[in-house]
Amino acid sequence: MKFLAFIASLLIFAAPVLADNAPVPDGKPHQFTLHDGQFWVDGTPIRILAGEMHPGRIRPEFWDQRIKQAKAMGLNTISIYLFWNQIEPTEGNFVFKDQTDIRHFAQLCQDNGMWLIVRAGPYVCAEIEFGGFPAWMLKHPGLQIRTNEPQYMGYCKTYIQQIGGQLADMQVGHGGPIIMVQVENELHRIDDYLRALKDDFVAAGFDGQLMTCDPSGQPWTTVEGIPNVLRGYNGFSNDNSFAMRYNQITAVDKPTGYPIYSPEVYTGWFATFGTWGPSKSPKVAVDRQVAQEQFLMDHKDVSWCLYLFNGGTNFGFTSGANNNHPMQTSYDYDAPIDELGRVTAKYKALRDVYQKGMNLTLPPIPPDPAVIEIPKFTMSLQSPLLARLPAKSVDSDNVLSMEDIDQNFGFVDYRKTFDAGLKGTLDAGPPRDYVSIMVNGKVVSEAFNGFRPAVNAIAKLDEPGPCTLDILVHNLGRNSLITSIAGQRKGLTANPTLDGTAITGWKIYSMPLDDPDQLPAATNAATGTPTGPTFFTGSFTLNDLGETYLDMSNWHFGVVWVNGHNLGRFWDVGTSRAIYLPSVWQNKGENQITVLELGPAPTTPEITGVANMVETSAKRAAPLWATPTTQP
Image (cartoon, rainbow, N blue to C red; front, side, top):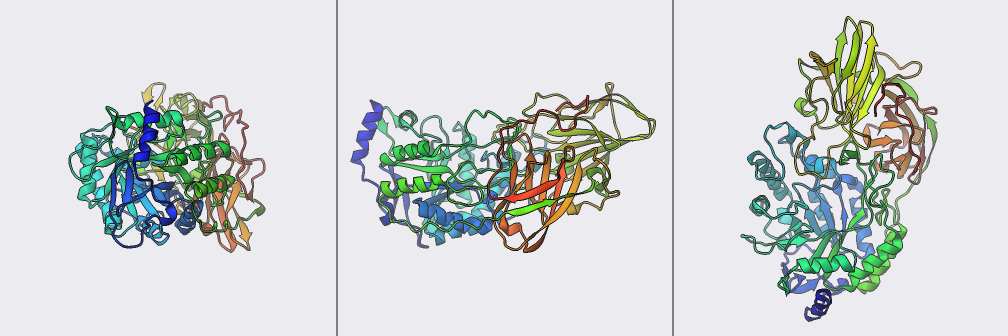
């Protein structure tokens, strides 16, 4: 009955203006307000029809195209997450260029007549590394995330001030496109921490409308200070969840006057490595999506955002993890615009829903980007990874974590030489995340704490001296769904033991591997059959540039760089077996490619550029290195 009463109550409010006549950002200050169950611009009711994309996952050369595609589908607003760890990659070093040039993104929204919602964090989740937090936070003793702990709040305040310096004057009240700024994300509670963050945003110049995203509890409308904070609800898409939201926005059956806004109405879902039967399907069928959108469209006072309109790519080592299951590199998300920037059948079907539902006259759909294929080319063995260790090591009696040596991503190698040989059971402790134990460059054991059962990295050894032990640790992404920093440090966090006795005296090599050319030249070339992680190199020639996928289905597990750009990880325990190569990272003529293969050398070290993602449901049966002591 409450749901029916609510639907009837919609009739008492002024219907939102059709989008063709609705106000748009035009460089002039406008008044954006919330009352009578609706959003208003200069006294005109509007309906927010938003699509989410992430500047940190999409090359900036494509931002304008994506915004135009959103407008041509019938959306009037863009929603974005900001990734703090990309904006402040090292402590005190704020970067606002390339994929973090958020002011440029806001200006493009303004230029295209699109409103903008900024979901600034500091925590965002988003399946991004560490939920958007900078990894350098982990080296500070006593720091506690998402609480009022003083160190953490100090870093948050500085970050928010920096964001304010970039975007505060781009708010709608100052002549810009930003209509709302989100504080935190899915905290599931309203407390002094959230109130303090709100005050920090106001102090940083965000004097317009703030919001938060939380599917629980009553709406936040009575917090001290101005402005109040709108509470958005994630994921409602049908009668039951919509009715539930209705109950949450009423108090004693009295409407709050705040409008209903869902920051995330899902177009798909993420995919992790090693997930063969995900609890939520990575795809949402077109007919189901259309029915969902039509339901929302029919309820005239509901505003929402498609999560995602364009998913993008977890380039480099930016992908996070979910319960230690690493995210796949592709963040396509079955969105209306695919990873390569092409309009999909879902886009066209939803465009029809928006056009008819809002009686719109839409601009033409922008042309799809050029897509190319690359003829098959063969890679050559270059050198073992261990032959290119950095010239300098950190020498320490005890092992140090990745964070302790001021490293965020990539690989750490822990090395020790045993003149008299190495005999006994080596226990390298719990893996964080993928551990390869090597003796004289040969993998003797592996371990991974993720979709496999969590076991220590153990090897039973009987090696004559002298011999060299290397323990290589690969950070596969810190958890993105987090409430504390427990377990988020990477590398080794305690000394390995041999028959229970701690091993001390280590040489520790930091290898972030943003670009493998930053490593020294190889001390020896790879010959014969590789026995450990190995670099392969090659080249291909392009007459024309275009978006493409590199088919990595012949390979096992590793990283790809093209012309010095880190494309991300591939792994044959994921459904996606190709990796996106953007046209803007290509050269006309010769292109250089490097592959770090962490598993055995592929039978055919070949790569082809293809127009569509290569997908498989075939699960690899054997460990990477099939030895008796392997424990992945």
